[in-house]
Length: 319
Image (cartoon, rainbow, N blue to C red; front, side):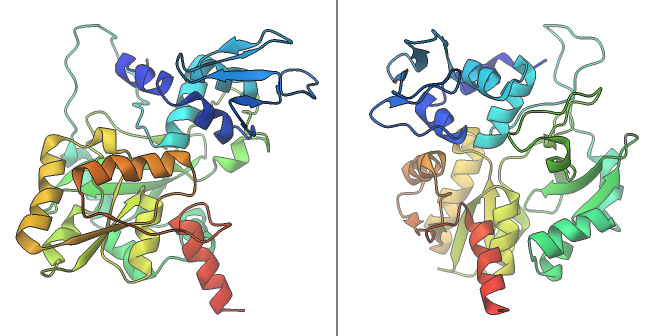
């Protein structure tokens, strides 16, 4: 069951930004309606109520409804798609005995730590990391990425989150077969298995990624903040020290204090290449409120995020 506060977060996402994520072209709060043969931009967005309505076919609703209707997903899968596309973490595992007053199960680090003592990469993981993402093998070793295959033959990349001292505090599992399990229009294939892109064990704390790099920072050295692990790997592979966050709204007070203290005591300068979309720019502005000195860097046209920019740069060097 999805957490109520997470669902509320998803409903509060700007409706026009969600529409653009779905491939709709929004101009002056209107777009062509995807739910009927529309030629006159009948779909209208109300940014005050954060809703949409088509005055021709009467399609209407909020952010989650728009995803459900556009991608033909049920409510849970629509929420997961929204969370995935906007970097909001969603707990994917259900408690064995659901209860409103059930305490949160703590993250069992001892159960998972052994997986990262001798990381192992499947052929699928190697293909993703080294052929698709063109990552430096030294970065993959530093991040202690490993992989596994579940009982349904789904291949997963396992990304550990450590605190500054190297203690395991969380894990992100990434579905390497996700693209194979979805159609080109992102609608799920009808099967007994509902594809998920990311999964997180109970209690996993996945806020700031790559915290051990902080101990290596020199005075006044730049630190790059990226949106998600993939961009962080690309930034590290390009020779920069970097951390990643999934969402500024998920940063705890301790996380914010940590970043501010780096600026105050080490003179650390912060830099960011926001994703080339509205959510990326919003994330930058949220972080800018915490770190006033955060410097904005613009991605080249055609590059959706830093990982894409990095891969493009590598390909250009080899041609």
